[in-house]
Image (cartoon, rainbow, N blue to C red; front, side, top):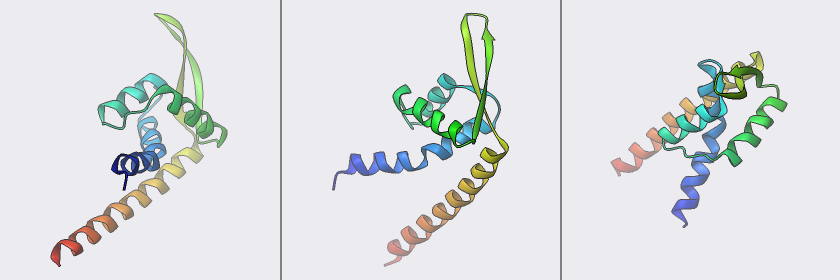
Length: 112
C-alpha cells in the first residue's frame, strides 16, 4: 500500500467541501483560499485551485466579481451562489455522516 497516495486521495476527496466552506464565510480572493488551505495542512497549489474554482463556477456553485485593488490590478473575489449554499449543506451532512461512520468502525475494531 502506498500510504502517501492514500492520504492524497483522502484530501482530494474533501477539497471541494473545504473550498466551498471557506467561500461560504464571505467574498474571498483565490490566494486567501490557498493560504487557508495551507494553514490547515490541506496544501494546494494554484494549478489545482484555479481549475477547481472554474469548474465550481461553471457548475453555478460560485460567482465572482472584480474588485479594484489599491496595490495592483483588480482582483477576482468569489462567493457562493444559492445553489452553492445548497450543495455545501449537502456536503456538510455527508461529511458528518462519514465522520460518524469512521468513528463507529474504528471504535468497534478497537473493542476486539
